Structures are given as structure tokens and as C-alpha cells.
Image (cartoon, rainbow, N blue to C red; front, side, top):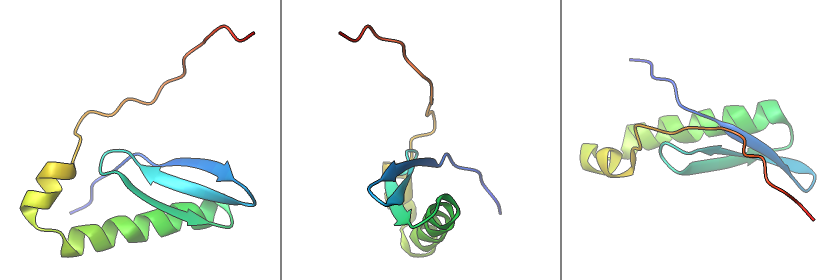
Length: 73
């Protein structure tokens, strides 16, 4: 079974950090592609090893990614 999750990737120093907010699982890589692939692998390992109770506890079904405008200065 395939399921899609959100991947948020941001630059940190000389590399990239990737985060899946639905499960609060993170990874990293030297490039955007590597950070994304490492996150995918981390998610697959999580689903291979986690109990169904842990999955249900960590899973956030509704995650919204948006931008917010604020006054600065």
C-alpha cells in the first residue's frame, strides 16, 4: 500500500533538513534530493518497525502548510 505524506525541506548550514509533520520524523542530506530520499527511507523504516499503536499515537491526519504575512520592523 502506498500513502503520501508531507515533506518540508529547508536549508540548514551547508545541507538540508527534511521533516514529515504528520509523523514528526526528520532526516537530512547534502542536497534537496538526498534529504527527500533519506526522509522517505526513515518513514519506511518507521512503518516497518512501529507498532500500530505507535503509528496511531504519532499520526496527525490533518496537516496544513501555508504562509503567513506579518509586519516586520
